[in-house]
Image (tube, rainbow, N blue to C red; front, side):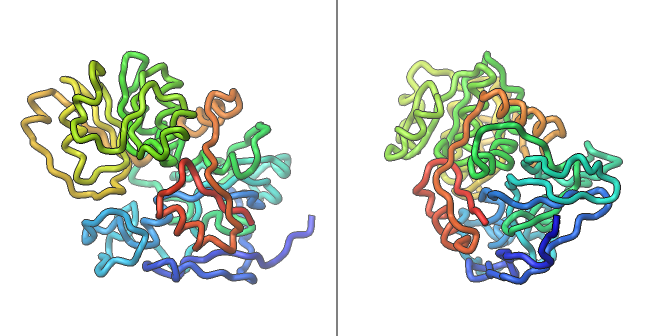
Length: 360
């Protein structure tokens, strides 16, 4: 197979506003290293990580909600999820679905032609469980907002499914984030899980994956999106921020809150947790700074778990769920790769339900 030496790519040139994402039609096509595969990108999903890394929201100097716009001040030392600078220019995009078209010297040639989705967590091959030795695809390494991308062979997971590339590109980041949260909180069929922001990519994945575990699920979303959220199968749907959440819950006893929202409503979520309940978090799009009454925390024997780096078994499990049709994609819209700025603006506006995907 003859491959081009250049490609079209949407390249993030630095921290800042959407104008930092620049279209290049003659960007050098990457070459796979000895342990890598080269993927022709069929589709690449969008996530808050893309927005937050580009804007510098992860920096401790930023205390606002996720806006997607440039911030007045971004710390030089901690502007990314890992708390360290990244190198620009950078091709972002973690959720690739595509076809392996070439492999490195140490990779079996039989993998050429495989349809794959990417595991975004880049691990030290000698210390796969060491969270301190991880990077992220599209952050510490170029990702999938391009016609081609490379990744370590173990991060390209073969998938057999009748779903389209765009549908499969909704799973990797959002669903692995959700499964990681539920795994860390040890959610079982004995739990009732409250999911704020259930219309988002991670929120919708939390609904489906908690139901797959047999838990009872109560979703929270703006009322205009209730019909879309209902299709994901929650047992109850509430407005995004009820004035009296406890009353709205009725007889429901919340044992787990699975949250990516945070913000000023956060104390209300903690207040409805049952004694011995668990709060698991992997985001704070409504604001990272919250009020906590420590008496609520310790007098109710609550457990809080942060969740970012997933355990290595999460992505293989997701592949199995996809192939068993145990979970389904929530594809809100597709955009051409060259319209990544417009796609990200739509993503930031949060008027959609599910995931937005770009297609080369």
